[in-house]
Length: 231
Ligand SMILES: Nc1ncnc2c1ncn2[C@@H]1O[C@H](COP(=O)(O)OP(=O)(O)OP(=O)(O)O)[C@@H](O)[C@H]1O
Image (cartoon, rainbow, N blue to C red; front, top):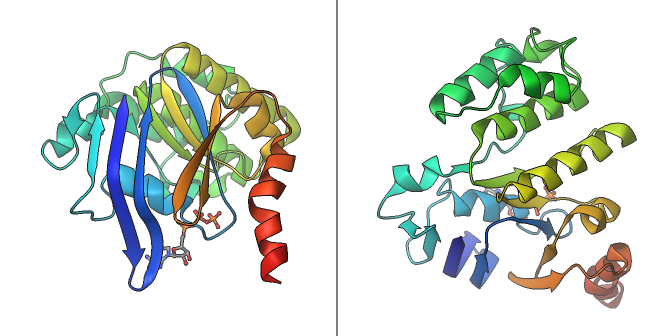
């Protein structure tokens, strides 16, 4: 369980989050949705201590990020984007590294096969397309076997078949009891996969349960009316 309270953050005089409070239970996929530049990546960075925060309380399964940083971080996996992969290492190198560091028992070969990566897992990252790198990144998440996963725009650059494959993997991880906080701009996919959605608006989170409503209509209601009113 992830418990966050009193989270405030600003870049100089630009407020990003104001008194954000929420709890995430186990075995859920939660969408994180907002227009470009609102603060989704900033929130994910704050939740794993990659940005400084003095006052908030952030606890993962009772472990406090400020008091027991290493123990906190061992429970989660976050790699912001495929730009953070090492260009001169292969996909396999990355997977072996994650398996070792997270002391995981997940079978690397099975994941490679399941994600259709057999033709390129021995290749260096610098020779891969964006979609291939997104697969490598997802494979790292699966191999980490971490209980909590923060995933930033995983569907960017994916073809429709791959999107279905990723959605299947997210559901499977959820069914294994993992908690996934997934930022995305793809509202149809959010509607298919997420149990609830965090809409980031006015520096705060509105949590809306997915009851099968039209997510794009909900997005329009949340954000477009505001943009139209501003125009
Ligand atoms: N290191 C930084 N220094 C100053 N401002 C920053 C920094 N990083 C991000 N910002 C600003 O903070 C705001 C939120 O950025 P963030 O990357 O969190 O948005 P986002 O919702 O993830 O956007 P996108 O959907 O475009 O990826 C933006 O206005 C951005 O310009």
